[in-house]
Length: 144
Image (cartoon, rainbow, N blue to C red):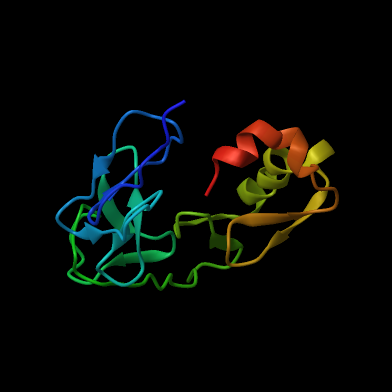
């Protein structure tokens, strides 16, 4: 049985036992033996499927440009409050009628039981799925 060799600097392997390593992109780096790359820009995360460093959820590029591979830091995305009575923000930060937002709990929670958290577009569910119902042991082993 052959022994696995760790990937060298600037390369990573996210599939144990595979025959080779993948190279980090120009906006990321890795230490030897890494299973992913680290982004050089603050608040960026390495997306393995496309080999790019994109802004983390809740952050946006500082130049207000598109969220593409970059080494430029991302900044917190501040969402405005809604100026019209009876509206609240959805998960994307857009103002919509609160009545429309009530359907969010139906789609996000078991049996639709939960309370909308104002200003987030998310629902705090009364019941939560057991982690293994969503991602079994084999699935969890592949998640960083």
